[in-house]
Length: 337
Ligand code: SAM
Ligand code: SF4
Image 1 (cartoon, rainbow, N blue to C red):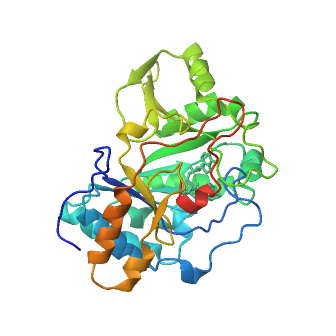
Image 2: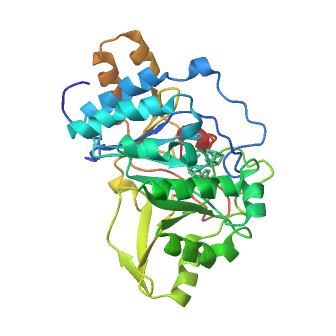
């Protein structure tokens, strides 16, 4: 790994300490808001190898990245992925990396939970929008709820702290706001609601129709509970409240608002080595070319610095005029939500 060198600071004086890495564009589900049913995936040869992912992530760690979130597509369907987690655990052991985590649909947790813990993973995000088996099959198209619930049970038993991420979808899981909340309370999981984002092609699913404002969701919590805003911020778009009656912490991710951009500490790497400096902007830097050009990291490091020097102030998503402005053509599975 490269030695600690000057940290990554962008033009707005934000230190880049958080890297989200998509390790595959593939998935065993086809969630309606994320993928189309007939996805064409990248040829395997376009993907960074596990060794290249290791080298790239290690370079970022050497440049001051302290938190690594592994995502996808579904990260746990990438062949040999545990080799990568094992490799990253050496940066936890050295103290350079403070947190290694992942976002998963949960389908493979039954298989990998224990090994993830062994690699130093302590907390995970599991995406789960509904506890109704039929609705789950509908929204994920290919997913099966029992398999995911078994995965979550295995993760909990292995000692992983679990945060459930639910995409708020109008007319779909509005009626489950409290049952999902109660289930999380019983199971000891945190819960975060995500506003649906205008990613990918709208296709048959018009995301404006699916749009359930988190302001409304919050208001209905307030009818039942006393809410206390928590100061805690992750440098990302999540805000948290505590439900005083149960002590439960609920998160809200509203990526459409600009109010988190000034504290943005993160960049995203795709499975082909494209670095996106902002989820809501098209600008990216190709890191695969400098990575493959030389076994030496000098060119790679300068490409990373050049990219960070272009990190924009904020993004342009806007639902407010009843049309989707700033809509991105990338699928979430590409940049890894
Ligand atoms: N497959 C993993 C999973 O589902 O957790 C990781 C990748 S997935 C792209 C990451 C997160 O993005 C998931 O929580 C998913 O619900 C969310 N997501 C996907 N498409 C979205 C959209 N259009 N709007 C908001 N969130 C979305
Ligand atoms: Fe797969 Fe996650 Fe996208 Fe669903 S949200 S299709 S599980 S990548």
